[in-house]
Figure (cartoon, rainbow, N blue to C red):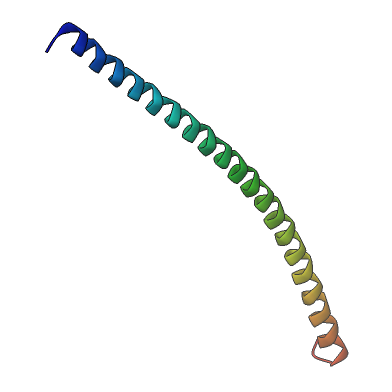
Length: 77
């Protein structure tokens, strides 16, 4: 194999590696964007769950008070 043939092969390999790195870079940017969106969605979900827990706790307190009132009205206590 001549020096020129070797250089041609090296150039081809270099070009292929460059293309691979470019593709991987785009894939990583896309993945990073997806992770950022997922992180934001998880944060929103956590906030919604926190609010839901607060509402459920409030409702549970309301139900307990209502049950105590019903028991008093029924003569249970």
